[in-house]
Length: 81
Image 1 (cartoon, rainbow, N blue to C red):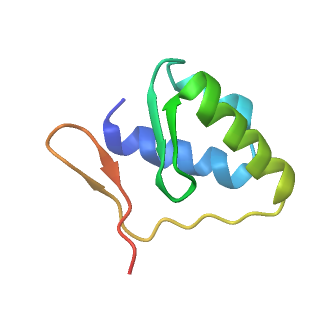
Image 2: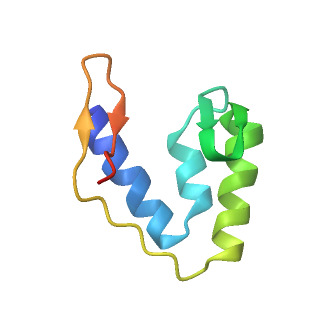
């Protein structure tokens, strides 16, 4: 799966509130940086708890990706306007 496909799949699961599916496509030791919250750590700890809290707090959350760039190192970035 390409980095673009993975990012699209990730955001699709976020919009559907499918935390288990997101965690299933991520490795537990993947690095997570939630910059506005100043939370950094492994997906299994920091990322998973954040996603569960997000899905619980906003069950009708809509995530729309307007543009997605994948850098040379495979990092997916959704630029903000």
